[in-house]
Length: 166
Picture 1: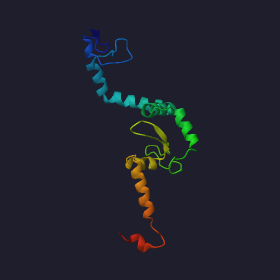
Picture 2: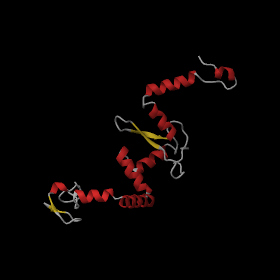
Picture 3: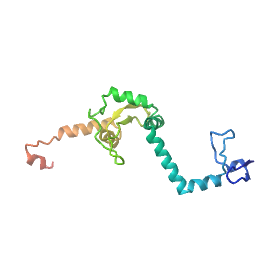
Picture 4: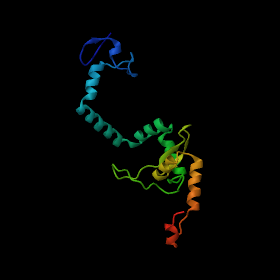
């Protein structure tokens, strides 16, 4: 039995959501009180605004958290990879050119990783990252695409040949 600190009612322990940060492993608010707060639109808007303030105050900390969770690397490791690659894409050897639609800033190079093993391969520009993604990270398909492009090079000096279809 446990008392909810919001509604002050005595309830069974299983009526409280799980919370790893407490001694008993349960939230201090009962499930009903907790859910009512989560459904409150004003509460959600305030939480989102507070979160954005924290992110803008320390973007490196936020980036570190994402990199650790998604790829198992730190912001320092990402920064070192960026320096080692000369701040250019590992495939096309160009800097990032795609801008974030929300703020107009250049995007960071994407972390390329093997989806089966999680091994981080390098940093890629948005175009190359999407390209190998659309080619299903399959080296044989990438080679076939390269062979196709080399075989079907169009000569700009001969417009008739470029418009012909085999």
